[in-house]
Image (cartoon, rainbow, N blue to C red; front, top):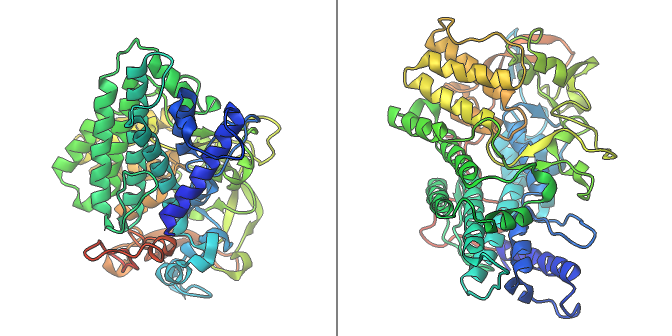
Length: 541
């Protein structure tokens, strides 16, 4: 049985179990998908993209977006490889993906990894089924193909015309179709933005061995996003069948109000803009690319719009172990010195004082595993971005599944800047800092040069989009993770050496991969067909 079919089997078992508990209309000794032909059953399946099933006691089940594989392991991977946070432990492979090839200190001393090799060496070693959850390549693939498969299940059922709806059937079917195409696009976007290759499959409980390039995955995602928009535009604004579906497929405590069709379309435009921005090197983007990004962002998420998030809630089993923003304040993940360095002003930026407090003494070369594993600051428990894992009350932080106003505004501003509208672009930086109550003085209208404006954008994406799973994408598109010898790396870095001495002008030669190999959990059981795209291992690009 190949990996995708193994995922499918798990999802099917969980779905069948949950439907039995809620509906109580099925012989408990005869698991079946028959409940899908009811309105409540098809809604339940549609909620399966979250890996969430409304059982009689409201419990969380393993699956897609809510699974540890995505909301904790995957999102943490992205923040670690963007050097926003670090983890010195080998769990889930975190220690090994955080492996700069070399760090040159202020006195020109070169520090290499104390054990093992660079990131490519360690990923090659860990990309094995035998590694289990310690294979960092596994997690995003697993969760996104659960999302895709549950969407395929709903679509295939709707195509049979066998589902009975209580009312407004046409609108309810369209809403479910939009829901499924949206999440398929989302899953393909994430696969295409991370792995060197992926699999396109629109049939439930089936896969294929025709791996395609990451760009084909992105192009397919764009087409599915466009298909979603077309469906949403055909739904009458006053038809209550739309909200009847969405209120059932989105967990009730993940939203204050449901998205209007216009808000949902704006969310999609933001994600389409992201797909362009993060899958090309910034230096390679043309004026046409920037104009496309600007056009999408101008029609993207507005301040106050609905956004797709996972809210911390004590009703979800083990949510303390799936929320990466929580672990930033526990024993797994810590603030990078390079992140603190990226605050424009740690005195006047109010976000710094809300998010961080000094460590006395600092953490230095934790467990002797590398000087990148050290920090002088920790996240404040109970802040907007971190809280303890004791859920006696609701906690503040939540996971951004999709885009946000801040991300969209910064994309709009960056595009304006590269199209020659520097001051208009800087207004977007000011807008984000204002909405986050940073207290920083405005930079628009101050006569900044293009180089200075670029630095404002770089800093604000690092701080304004902290812990939103975008740090790695930015490091890749800016060339930071490329070898120093090829013009990459990061200079002028803060780091504590092995003796705890503060260095302010170090050079990090990350040499991280741009796109990653398909997990062996898939390729071992589903070998690529002749003519398939390269699935890895990859060389540095």
